Image (cartoon, rainbow, N blue to C red; front, side):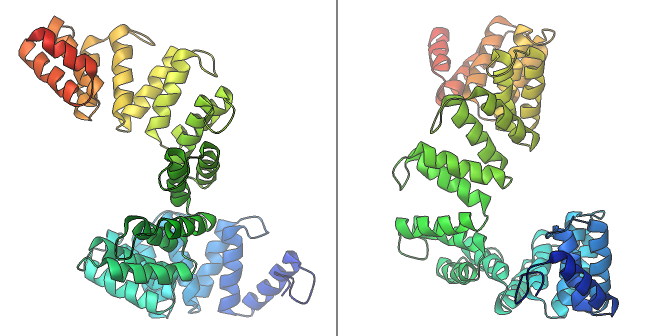
Length: 398
């Protein structure tokens, strides 16, 4: 009552004292509730060590929800060393004790082989149990299996019904997945307006990936009127929820002035954030900004380091930019052999310009042995991939 101000003024400190007293009296549910408060930092400073102790006490007292919550901490390394085998055991205890979310988490372990060998059939049965027990995420997971034919024959109509149940149960992922089926007309009549409404519900419910998807729709005018400002707002919302790809899109918007006034400093800051979170495209874009001194002092060495990070992240354009740096000796010593190897990696990764650039090196024997036949093959690959220079260079060799 004190926690939510029901019948009394809200007073979280007072609520914690009272719940602690109940926990000290061996009320397992109270211990679990208090553990969740400390784990989530719910109007008190987060204390994961305290949370673990309390959740363990509650789980030992057969509070199934607490076993599931403690399993989540071990499964994700939240305040404890990651231990998926330990998490699996806790999810099993939670599920056996009637916690539907525990069954859902246990199903995920079987589906992905986390702490236990993969077993799609077992995962399916557990998701059904979770969904029947009222766990919306379990309904969503079961819908996903029918949607994609994982462990069961593909059944879009069944997926629609399960996603609908998940969405009605406040699963933002369920709403988003249902929206995809309405957008594509799979298992249900195609309905763009219904899809958009479901996407909005999913985005409002915290699904950053769906916010990002909506951003793309508004940026490209796909199924909605093109609206760069609306796209940016959605990308920003997704970025704030940890979607690094959306942070990258926010940076591009500020760099190009799409839906907002051009702001290179803001572009650099956001690009750095996305790069730090593992978005290889942003690392490459940030490298270009350092190379050209856009919104930040020019720094070729920093650019090379960022291109390397992008390339290590399997972004072919980053490998191409790094190859150019080694070929020209910008940001470090010239290394033609290294440049050729990087062009090869980028070409193999589908970046057509790199195929053409590598072909040029084979024509003149730069960093590689001269080989006109191989050069022609590379120009052909570049041309087929959309490199106009590849097409023109091929004609010169013929």
